[in-house]
Image 1 (cartoon, rainbow, N blue to C red):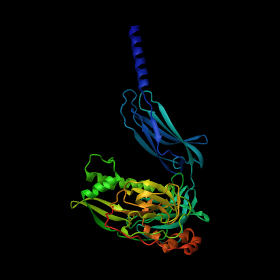
Image 2 (cartoon, helix red, strand yellow; image 1 turned 90 degrees about the vertical axis):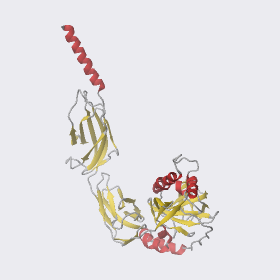
Image 3 (cartoon, rainbow, N blue to C red; image 1 turned 120 degrees about the horizontal axis):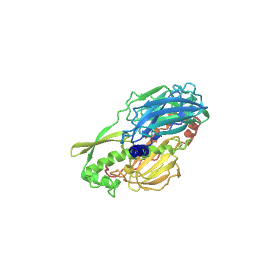
Image 4 (cartoon, helix red, strand yellow; image 1 turned 180 degrees about the vertical axis):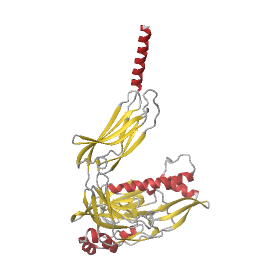
Length: 461
């Protein structure tokens, strides 16, 4: 009998040890990791444990006190636990609403999870945070702001309270702000009203603090809606082969797929990727005005900003894309000149734009030159207005020799026509940003170069 009891006890011990050994741990991660808490700050934590999680708790620790802000429980399974539970996320609010005695200053957010198995191990993740309870405030200027759809405008505003981010929101788009020269307590934002937004969007200035609390303010605003051109673009096999081989000469894009599929991928997915690469260059800007006077306009306009093209193949519409820029005709071997003073932030191949140069003109204003045959500048070079940057060509998605010229404001492409207009620059930009430069502009204004002659019939992308 003693042997039986001893054997049974040994089996129990072995089973318990095995159950403990097979018990698991919980992985916890917050992305993004919280860095600040306010009155009520949303927090998302992802948890992964193949056995599931029995309990999740969250606490704010500050000055020796601990405040619970989350307590979520599920039924315990100590012996017959799950083995393939999928990762999941918990979302909760943390801040003064849940912890009334919370003070401004340093604190720690702790999240604890108990594994739903025999051992029930407790795992935790802790984040040092700053408690920010002061609300942000903002007041916009009293100017009248007239904006063309697809164009841009400048607004000044005064932030207050606790804030660490400020700018302008226009629908789904957000534009940064910069300190207003000579008035450090004020800020300004150059913002676009993008071509693809409906005409009933109202822009607002906003400020946000580190805890995510946001304040907004309206300003006087009038939009001039614009109907952009829609045209058919005829495709044939010879043109598609030329364009595809220009962008992808080594056949790396959809190898083995039909020519039309490869063209549609380049015209759509690669176009979106290249436009995002271009938008990301907004972060490579200088916080000062680099440009002087109106931007140079050269060449004959072959395609307008925001032209929508219906791509037709054998009488059937196979694609639709919008052309964000001007196609300016040129001759083989013609120089590509800087539209204004600026620093080179891109000088390389850029997919559908072929050999491409992007110049930064300060405060997020950048000009784009595509389809070049040759590039003669490098990133970091300072180029003067009218300075030669290379030779015009038809690289990328171009059916003939021309320069694709566009401009972007904080990564959003806008109509370059405004920047060709000296009066518009004085009235809409310099009058608010740098009035002292208006006299300088008038004194140094020079006529733009004459348009170059166009030779031959060309297909435009």
